[in-house]
Image (cartoon, rainbow, N blue to C red; front, side):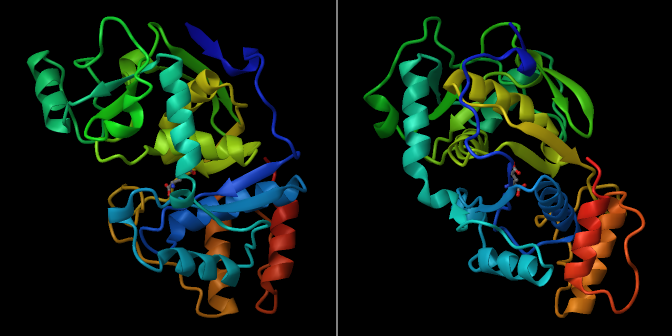
Length: 316
Ligand code: GLU
């Protein structure tokens, strides 16, 4: 099966024109990399006269830091990046994820899996398949039943098992990224059957992001390039669930001196938004990273004036 997004039929469309979002995980304050994603998605929404939503992706409770959501909101506000609707929290949207899981189950395309990461790593190495830190472990299908069935009553109660989506063979997803150009991923050879619910009962990022983008009628997803390799999975899930596929635009990552992506896990320094002068400095750095040119650089420029000029200069 080769799925080109332009060929998809019968999908629901976003209701309200351009709708973008910024979806940080509250695992720490914003750093230079997350500001680039926030600014890029905000500018794209403003340029298109659209709405920009703020969604806090707090499903993975142990990784979340108490108060980080509010800290992120105050950093965004200090930078003049205001959102247009009530902030949403994934932790409050469990119902929608469960319904999607049940839908997948009714379609007979998920199955329970008891493999730990270690079991998967062992199986792959016994098959002579090398594993490296930066590479996805392609699920070898150990728990996949020969015949897929619907497990309706078990989905909610069998929380000690993970649930995986069974991919059809030759599942190749092709799409056009607005910044990175044509993309193609063979989900069978590059990802394998992927999890939609973890064994600890937490819905995975892939399932939650797809459900939220659909329920919030997101038309444009503008985010960091580190998430590009997740997009084919998300498009495939949208297709199975009958959701609209948004436009995707992946922004260049900010790297540290070792060439690693800045992340809260590697304790990247938070942006300094203590006053307007410092916030504007951070915005200017983010804009330079995004390749924006000709923006006002005077000392007296206000954030509002600068953002207006940046919106005009945004060219995607
Ligand atoms: N929550 C994800 C992150 O902080 C972003 C998800 C997305 O934009 O799809 O990296």
